[in-house]
Length: 357
Image (spheres, helix red, strand yellow):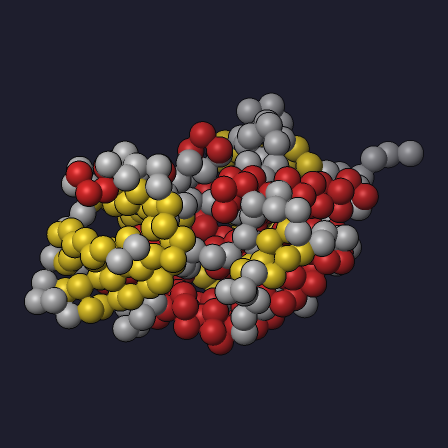
């Protein structure tokens, strides 16, 4: 009996949050798929999230989620990302993601501020749940296998690696941003998209610490202030952004959720002259125009494949039929607190669902 050579329905490139969720949704929808990851294991960056605890969602409505993504005062980039994400978030809202993990027998814990974690506080629990689902569904997973090129054909794509090529009807790029390159986010998905004619919005760090050598901070290096506050002020002293949350003092300067979200606001608003004000206990400290740490250390990458060239109802390229995108490979980002994992999951679900809609 002769063997019939047929393409796989979907090749998912990237085994992080978006790629694992895409493969899980494909398995549940009986869509033949293969997951290809450049590193030796899946979910390397997921294992780092929230200091290894994995804040995978925030239990709020899609409307509130999108308002938070938009940023206060509605920065143009924030408005654009929120509008782009509307369809995906309404199809796969945070509560659906929470239910998904419960369906995989992952006990979850809701914090007072609505952030959601695995109940045992271990990111490994989330990654292992994906691994179990993919194993039980017999979804092929290829690790330690960087993709070297993606070539459109008349009837699909040739996905090239160093040792083999794969024929796929559709390709989903879920390779992440460019932060933490040692964990696999090296910008290869954006490079593939660029080679296929897509615009790449320049990379900038998002949710990253700010540098200062001020002795008031450096002498406190290693101290964490849980109930702290950070504000961003304009050059003339007007409060532009105000966030109450954790502030950490580091040897290089400031970090923690309040600082990360303030830095994200500064980047989105493209501020050149500003003051960041932090409250540590009852002491107010102000700093002018602090430099962010390098993008390779950022929690998320601002920039990536332009959403102008992606259909928000399907996550399919407007330029290359059959090419889809999910997660941080695109020019989307959110505040700290579970938003970025939720966006990765929701856009992945939207892309896969569109294949058999």
